[in-house]
Amino acid sequence: MAIQTFELLILGSSAATPTSNRNPTAQLLNIAERFFLIDCGEGTQMQLRKYKARFQSVNHIFISHLHGDHFLGLPGLIASMHLLGRKNELTVYGPAELEDIIGLIHKHSETQLGYPLKFVQTQHSTKQLIWQDEKVEVYSIPLKHRIKTTGFLFREKPFPRNIDKYKLEKYDVSFAEIHKLKQGFDAVDNSGNIIKNEMLTLDPVKGRSYAFCSDTRYFEELSSDIEDVDLLYHESTFLENKKDRAKQTFHSTAKQAAEIAAKANVKQLLLGHFSARYGNLDEFLDEARPVFPNTELAIEGKMISL
Amino acid sequence: MAIQTFELLILGSSAATPTSNRNPTAQLLNIAERFFLIDCGEGTQMQLRKYKARFQSVNHIFISHLHGDHFLGLPGLIASMHLLGRKNELTVYGPAELEDIIGLIHKHSETQLGYPLKFVQTQHSTKQLIWQDEKVEVYSIPLKHRIKTTGFLFREKPFPRNIDKYKLEKYDVSFAEIHKLKQGFDAVDNSGNIIKNEMLTLDPVKGRSYAFCSDTRYFEELSSDIEDVDLLYHESTFLENKKDRAKQTFHSTAKQAAEIAAKANVKQLLLGHFSARYGNLDEFLDEARPVFPNTELAIEGKMISL
Image (tube, rainbow over all chains, first blue to last red; front, side, top):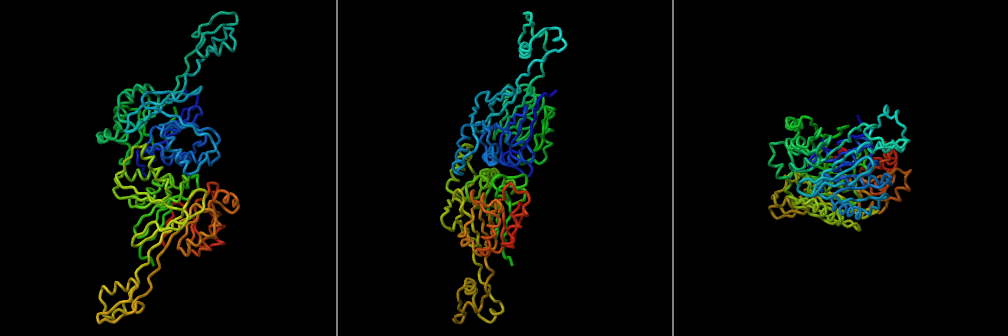
């Protein structure tokens, strides 16, 4: 039972060369009204408009790596946010060199943004907490691609424990003590008696999680960083008939993505980053589902709610 | 009567912030199967695909200035040309700093193009011939915008004179002498008599011309650089009710664009670079046509053949 929004909108599904109906990689994730933009390929600002997404509500943008199809929409989006009157801080998470590129573009266009733009450098050797607030935490996770690349893992923080209201009626407990119970601590009633947490509380619903993995070659060790996530996006640039090409270009096949999903024991798999050579994407499902049945395609406009 | 192709395809009509149905500036000009891309806003490669334009036939790209809405589609287009196997040289004409930006993007994406990419620096103080072959010549022309900006002028070179075949029958002239007549020279017949050129030739059709002017504030002197062109594209970011805003941001109104068209004695005017604030573009025509009747809108997908 969803107690707060956890919604993913796919803005682009193509690999490096976009096609007439497939845009380069971008996704918009909404967790409890925090809007996270994940990768920002060319045309992302137009895709956000097309799907009537809340453009200026995005305060955090995560860039996996510096291949053009994953970040070339960023300078235009940053500029449009400025031109449309943005005042709120925007933070971009990605490789250090991204700041140099955006800086050079701003220098030569003589752009002075009307809002603070912050860069946070990711590193691709270990999983790392890169942002959190009281409800959500975001990690970067190492991927293996031709240049330094990270995926991103989004998790709801544990929800407070649920108070068993029927049992609570029998106890004389202050509001302050009830708050402690919700956090998992024992409480003290108004007569000074200790009440064990498990006497008055029930397990909360489990926090949901989403892992974004693009671009990467197949490597088994990835599964430990994304274990048990509710939703996994894993690139599948190729089908198995291009397995050698996948290996050579540090990409994955649909079957390999399904194998990672199975090993990591995720609940659902989304495939994307399809090479322009493939017209019929059903073949990706045909290849992945025998290995991992709960697989879908991450195509433009698709919305997945957890 | 057209004797070779002279065709302009509009790929983007929006000012700095694109809308759901207007893309940033880009145009494809085909003169005698030379394909010239003029400006390359974000999403141009997708627009080229959408309109089934001949992507890899573009050998020359002209960038007016370094505001994002005029060049942010260039790195993605350069990359896709490479990924799709291009071998032919591509030349980009624009401000010197464009090479630095593309170079930095290629450095951090570790891109090694499979084809030669050449940059030719434009300067914005005087009209200058920047490219020519036997059929076409291209000039950069100074515009007045917030940062250094040029327009571009495309001209067919003069066609050979037409031989008057009825009159030719009466003369005994070799093929070599006919070639001289076509070039405008007098000829010598097989008996050694001089034949004045005007005795045997007719004026050829006039070479056609297209001037692209975006972005610029209104300035009268522009009209001398684009005098008598067959087709003028002139930006009209605003209507007259935002004349002050136009002046402040170094842009033009529809009426001002029409005034330039009238002063320059052009044959046809195309308006474009419309601010996102305007929904109904007919107002631009209503404002321009009383000043310059032969005015059209440069909207996405429009094809103009001269």
